[in-house]
Image 1: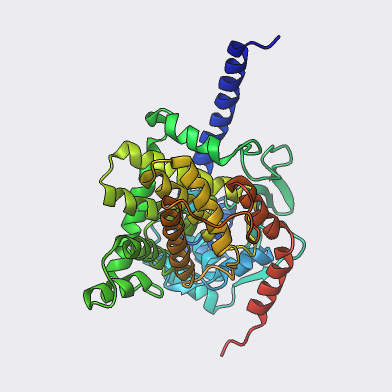
Image 2 (image 1 turned 180 degrees about the horizontal axis):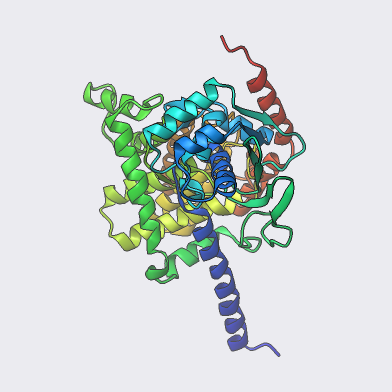
Amino acid sequence: MSTPENQENKSITKNNILWNEYLKALNHEVVPALGCTEPISLALASAVAAKYLFGHGTSVHEKFSKISKIEGFVSPNLMKNGMGVSVPGTGMVGLPIAAAVGALGGNPDGNLEVLKGLTNDVVELAKKMLDKDKVSVVIEPSTPILYSKSRISTETETVSVTISDGHTHIVNIEKNGETIFEAVNDITLKKGSNYDLSQASVLSIVEFAEHIPLSQIAFILQAQELNDALSKEGLAKEYGLHIGRTLQGHIKNGLLSDDLQNQIVIRSTAASDARMGGAVLPAMSNSGSGNQGISATLPVVVVADYLQVDNEKRARALIISHLIAIYIHSKLPKLSALCAVSTAAMGAGAGMAWLLAENKYAAIDRTLSSMVGDIAGIICDGAANSCAMKVSTSATSALKSVLMALNDTGVTANEGIVSHNADKSIDNLCQLAQGSMLQTDVQIIEIMVNKDSC
């Protein structure tokens, strides 16, 4: 016979198991990243291939003189997200320059910061390789959604490195036709992660964030530090579309007011401007994306600054935001036609609601459903400077939905794809991405690859 004490013990055990999964998810998905993570993935494959081809201690000039060609093979989605985005430190866009600088000067142990500390020598020699047509990147059909492979050849040797199902998840290394590493027994091979969120819910995430010891989640404050530094960089210089800097200027000339809404948009967008415009500063990423990390971080930070809350409250609000962003993204393809900046901003909406509302969970539930009803249709048409536009749109929706929730209103189950609670609304949104939007993605890639260049 089950007693109240037994039921309580089962509940504690279940929470401990789930909370452990939450901590694993946060540690796996919230990491520093320098540059857009799709070209960075190919750069990492090249850096690792160069390591196995040349070993340690080979100079940049020696690598340049010995490499006869670098061939990149990527999935359609990775091509979509890599073809038009700046590669930090190079002044160029696209996958070929990422593959070249990765091979010549990338840190094979750097993961998403593989291009940290590039020298002028590396960049100039990489550009010469492109000029000599030694670098090619093509779409590899029938591959996983997130897939990059770099094959580097000299006159006598060839090494190829394949990354799949995760931006840094190496699954195969071959040298001179012989397999020297294969992740066939890797339990994370199919999902590219080491955690299980199948039992997660918005309510349990909020409970986790409120009660987990601060010492176990204090690391999340680094997201504030890194992404705020990117924001300041974006406001200081004209990166990308310089949207944040432009809006800040209109505050000075009186066309915009210096209020909470505009500060959320300006500070979030400026960080994306800098990141997509090639700034050599890392972002704290979320689910493999710096823009998702920015969207999950900076709206919450701006509200925390406005309320002048302490670091503990900031950390717990940021945990809610980042973990809900991860939770939603875990239900999506790794890359898809649905703009994941919008789903990361849903996490930010939850974090802001937690900071501002008295009835915290009810406000979070309303906020998330309202955002599903508001911005479900934003497509991902590749990583580019225009991503900052989507950051601004999503941040605006987040605060708008929070303010509605504070007045006990929001999009209801009587409207569109929104359901009776946030978890079901999220499921409905993710069904679109897993279903009909797969064809949308094919159409987007077809348009991007074949559109007029003039």
